[in-house]
Image (cartoon, rainbow, N blue to C red):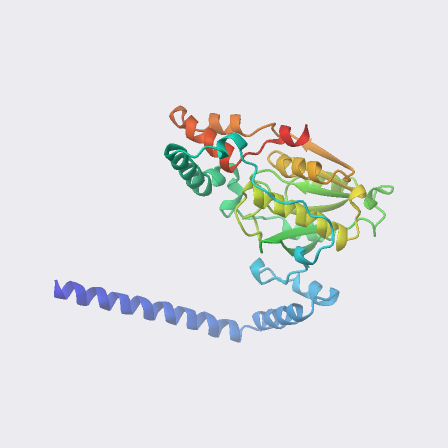
Length: 308
């Protein structure tokens, strides 16, 4: 037993030393790499002052989005903000028996572990491969926004007002809400871009460089922040803003339509009226009761209720 303990300690020490050496070698390699040194210098300048020149220089590098400077913080917004709330079934929330509390606990655990990742598989770390093409072909600018709760949103904006576009389409902003496994670089943004509209594409919570989990209240907060950014930072009035939504993106579009009636219009494509039926069909029959309760309590994406 003593020899086993000694060997375990020895292996642990060797592992720690190996990890420390790897980190040290990576650090030395980066210091000696002129490209990395240039990147650090550019990033430092951009974090001090994100001027047009500094942002252009920073955009030439591909790096983790957490280091990108925040360009719009909704805390400083002057636009009216609806109160974000989770869409939960009112009747379910009023019960207080022990079995109901146990069901609520199980529902919350199911949604925050498996459920949200089945509903939004794009938040599991898939790569967004077309960013360079979006920037090179359409001149897309990358932004980082911060919500009231401190979440960060990765946003791409293409301004067609400068280019004239198709007629005067560039004066209308189309905000695209993607599906559950889609990204703005390869999603619904292509249609309005080809038609000459100005376009905003944004990543769902947990997608790309955006943080958080795509729960209803977080999705609402993201949508509200994007609209405030468009109004205050990009100077697009709500009456000149429309929303194009695909699949599960129809939820955030429906919520925006219900809370921002000044919007020009919304377009919903291949979406649903309520996610409950889809969720029940996707899970085993024996779990249908728990699935229904989980949707009602934690992920009540009820588009029909918002639009009617």
